[in-house]
Amino acid sequence: MNKDEILRILRETSEELEQIARSNARPPVADGERLYVKFIKGRPAYYCRGKDGRLVYVRTSDRKRIERLSTEYYEGKLRAAAVKEKRQIDRCLEVLGKNPEASDVDKVAGKLAQAIRNNARLSELTGEGYARKWQDCNVVVKKYSIRKEDDYHKHKTLRGDYVGSKSELIIADRLYVRGIPYHYEVALPPEAGLEKARPVFNEFGMVEGYEVTGFSPFDSDTLHPDFYVLNKRTRKAYFWEHLGRMDDPEYCRKNFNRFMRILDSGYIIGQDLIVTHEDSQNPLRTESIDAIIERYLT
Image (tube, rainbow, N blue to C red; front, side, top):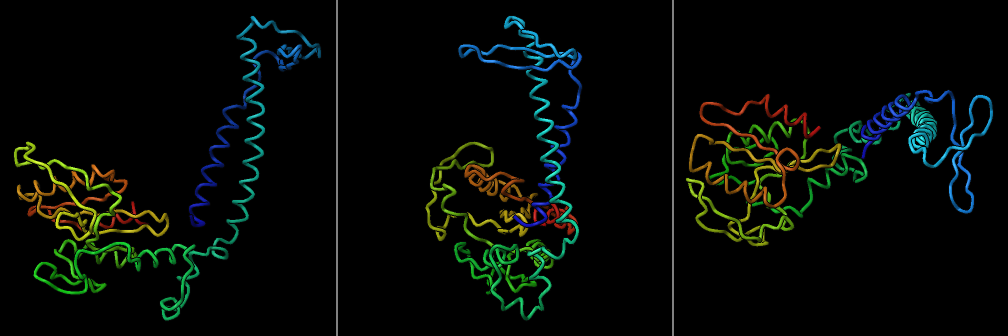
């Protein structure tokens, strides 16, 4: 968690505490009565003290009055605690906000000369350091050698990868220009549980059989989503699938089965999985890519 995230949480907490203080800042209903509790032979006895200072016994049968006085007592304690905690948080926000650049560790790497930054071992506790380790990680296994052109992967990205379509090229280049770490065509992690039987649907939506996937990322039926991307600020990673021929019925049927397997594995669209699509009449727009990057990856 970086400083911006901490500041956001502190501000939200301060606002919530202010709401608590305001919502409980109402005077008692019964002219300043205050609840007192004494224990007699281990059992609670309720009293209230009015403006005249007299302590008056409240019968246990008067449940509404005891409930009201107990609630007022609790709300007074809650209000005082909220005001005290908000005051402490506001002091932290004041100190952190005086010179935000001075103590922001995530901005240190960005201020270095490129030649130094490229060779320095960045701390994994910072966003940039974590992103570099994530990008260089060998845990994710790629389906193809992304540095080599083949019959399918003919489009070279700004980063030097080869991808399978012009739309994937646009996505990859927008990610690269924005400094978003990404992997291309990696295997879904084995822990996704894809070894379970999954139904296969025909063009009429009927189940025509079942498929069983293996654990190895090299199996022919292992899924390889188009992109695996990282939000450096939150350290949240997403799969990104682009559907490029939505006016092709066979293509849609094939990808329907793919998405069944992904969703059945516990991935949720918009939470773990980003999806874009296009057809011959409605091409992918760079504005749409930029909007997704802004929402999920910055």
